[in-house]
Length: 73
Image (cartoon, rainbow, N blue to C red):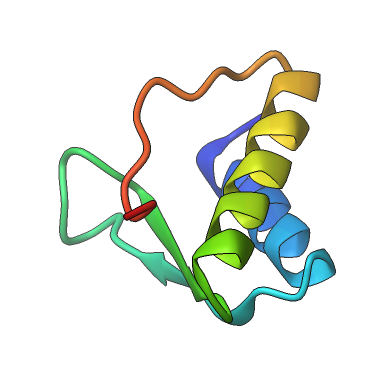
């Protein structure tokens, strides 16, 4: 799975769980540490946690394990 496919999977997962304003930002020409940045908003902190958990589950099903998360607080 390449980085665009991974970003698309994350975006679709967030949209399926009613994440708001989900967008993929292309960083391929701007950064050496990331190809894409997926960003979304949620209704409240419980919704943020549920979105994160769902994304982690989808990634683990693809044998991709999250080593770091930002934005839970």
